[in-house]
Amino acid sequence: MPRPTVLVSDLMTSPVITIRKSENLTNAADEMRLADVRHLAVVDAKGRVVGMLSNRDLDRARGRPDATTAQVADVMTDEVLTVKPESHACEASAILLDHKIGALPVVDDAGLPVGIISETDFLRVAHVSLGGDRLSDDDD
Image (cartoon, rainbow, N blue to C red; front, side, top):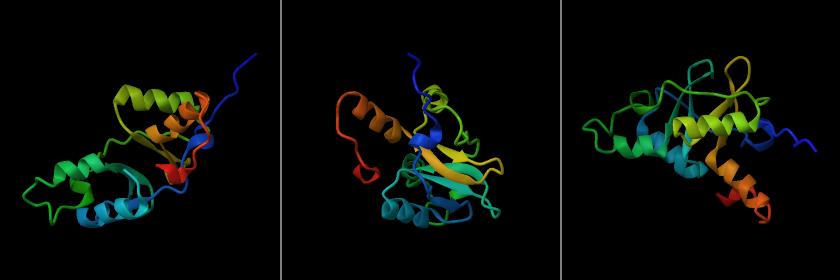
């Protein structure tokens, strides 16, 4: 019996929390804390994904001499990998594992963010597969 195809859209968190690359790091940290997330998709003036900012990026930036004035663009990962909602979830998990990253922005054909898929999303699947109860998105 063939396995059902699981798509990124089946697992991703949506909507994704975004931040402009011109924002300061204090605002980024506040946004992460308020949204209770570990990753923000960084967008340009047209709303297209141009980077990712993680809580680890913010932790590293705290030691910078310009930490109070630095912008998201100064510390974000700008060589961002993305997936489409119709991509296979297996492809997304392989990217996370191969590149040792915690999350991928999910974008439409115009590069606009429609969601995010993270390690947590895959852990939810593993949890249920191992016999656990389904967890809500609020259980992060």
